[in-house]
Image (tube, rainbow, N blue to C red; front, side, top):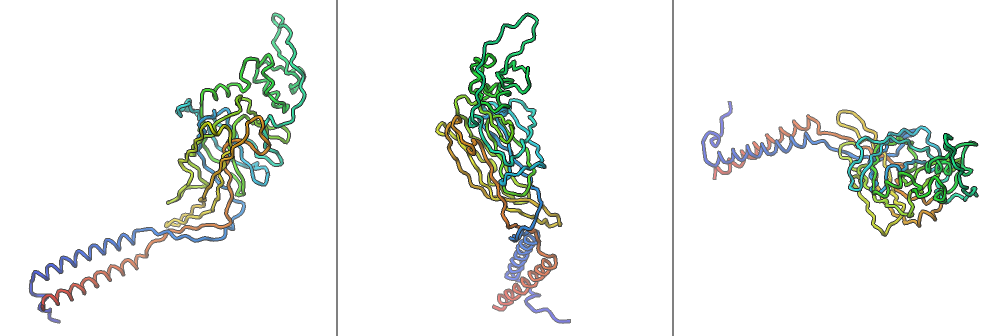
Length: 381
C-alpha cells in the first residue's frame, strides 16, 4: 500500500485551519449548486400564432363610482360589426353607496346585450324626432271605472294604457321618440323622467361589475356606458333621460382585467388602476387600447396553459353635452382589444440530475486537491 505523506500524519495548527476552511467551502458550494438545481428556469420563445377558431376568456372586475347599476349597460361587439351569437357571459352588478360600501350584498345578474352587426351605436336624442300628438287633458275617471291613461300615440297596441311615467317612457323609447317632452304629461309631471335611476344618481350611488366574457379571437371591444339600452329595428338606443343635467362622472377603478387563465409570474398592467375625474370632465369617453399576445405556458410537470398577456395604453376624449352627442360618440368606458399575430411560449426547465451530481463530484475533488496543495506549501515552509 502507498505510504501517507508526512504532512498528512502530523497534526498542525495550519492543517486544522485548512481543513476547516475547506469544509466550509464545500458546504457553501454544495448549497449554491443545490439551489441552482432546484431553481426552475423559464425560457421564452416567440413563434407565429397559427391557432384558429379559438375563444378567449375575458375576466374583469370594474367599479364605476358615480353611476348606479340601473343606469349602466354593458355591450360587446366585433370590430367587423358581426354578431357574436355564441358569446357566453356571467356578469353580476353590485350596488355601492356614495362612500363605496355595498348597499345590497346579493348581486344582480344581468344579460349581455346582443352585439351589433350593421347596427349603429347612437343615443336617443340623436334620432330624428317624430311628431307626436300633443298631450290632451284626461277625462275624469268615473267611479268604479278602471284607470287607463293615454300613451299619446306611443302605444304598441290600440287601447294600451300608460298609467305610470315609466310605462309611458318605455312606450316612447319603443317608438324611438324623445323622452325629454314627457315632463308635460300627467303621468310624468313633477317626476324625474329617468325613474328610480335618476333618484339613485342623485344619491351618488356607484356600481361594481364583475364577471367574464367568452368571445371569439378577433379584434373587438366591450364597453360600460350610461343609460338604459333598447333595441329598435336596426338601432341600438341608449336612454339617458336620467341625466337631466347632461353630465355624469366616468371615474372608475379596474380591480382586475385579464385575458385567459393566470400562470406563474403573470402580470396584468391594469389591475388596481383608478381613473378619477373632477368637475372639469363633465362627460367623456375613456378608452383603453389593449394589445393581446397569445401565450402558452408549459409547466415542468408537462401541463400546458393556453392564455394571454397584454400591454395597454389609454386615452380620454372629452365629449360635448349629452344633448348634442353624435353617432359613434357614446360616452362611457371602452376596452378595445386586438390580438398579435405572434405567440409567446414560456417553458419551465430544471438542471438535469446527472449534471448536478457531476458538479458535486467536481466540487469535492477540486476543494480537496486545492486544500492539499495549500497544506503542503504551509507545512514545508
